[in-house]
Amino acid sequence: MRIRKMRVIVIGARGQLGTELCAVYGDTGLVPVDIDTLDVRNDAAVANLIQSAKPDLVINTAAAHNVAECENDPATAFAVNAAGARNVAVACAAVSARLVYISTDYIFSGDRPGIPLIETDLPGPRSVYAASKLAGEHLVAAECPDHLIIRSAAMYGCAPCIAKGGRNFVSLMTHLAATQPEVRVVNDQITTPTCAKALAAQIKLASEKAPPGVYHATCHGECSWYECAREIFDVLGIKTPLLPVATEDVPSTVQRPRYSVLKNKRLEDLGLDIMPHWKDALHEYLHLSTLH
Ligand SMILES: NC(=O)c1ccc[n+]([C@@H]2O[C@H](COP(=O)([O-])OP(=O)(O)OC[C@H]3O[C@@H](n4cnc5c(N)ncnc54)[C@H](OP(=O)(O)O)[C@@H]3O)[C@@H](O)[C@H]2O)c1
Image (cartoon, rainbow, N blue to C red):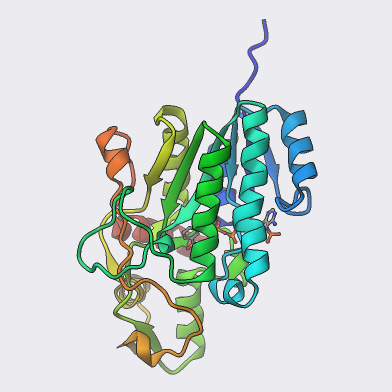
């Protein structure tokens, strides 16, 4: 008798996280889907694809998440991050598939410094991007009973971050260090840099073992963007001057949370938290990227 392999659809398959998820699920009946095959805004196409693939699990990483572009184009942000997420949720519910929707630390206001946020803390989105992702969370929860909403933060991976023009924070820092006389980085926005590879492994474990609901999944520890850059410069031996600056010194059209550190409380309570410390994950990533 042939045993049917678990069938997993990864939406946003060539993105930072999608690429790592495809690696993690490589030995299953994986259906990688990118925007050329499926635009999540097209409800009929989403329904058709999910109906015909009959997946056990769908992981929706698709997002409009260039935060400044979302501010200028709220219609697209909500169409992809909220209505698109709903299309996927409705289709998953119709075939009783489990759905994982990736959300963000940005749904929080960030005005409570020093206390990491848990899943039940009250959201307070400060940007169109954040509001559209929070709307996506609510629509996923409303439409698909078997859902995991996984909030992460400050992600970097080996594949380019498509929404951010192909650069993640690490590659942006190395690029600036190579092309500018000095590099200035904000020292008063605190987050937790999170490696997409570690997050993909965490998502797989949670998908197998966790009950439906909202989960936080970031690396452990916390730092400012400046401290993260300092670590990158030190590990790679970069000598370009690196200067800490305040948010007010960097003109921006976007409000970002000052303190958006997430505590993986629900995963910890279930004994399922396998995320590494941000420095360990960053060192491994930098080591691997210097080998290539
Ligand atoms: N990056 C971060 O720091 C961060 C932090 C917290 C949470 N998140 C969340 O994590 C998820 C993954 O982020 P990421 O960094 O891996 O993003 P990414 O590299 O930009 O990948 C996102 C993928 O979504 C696809 N996509 C965009 N619009 C789509 C649409 N309308 N229909 C179908 N696919 C579409 C993109 O396709 P194309 O290849 O055609 O552009 C891309 O492959 C997102 O939901 C994001 O909100 C990210």
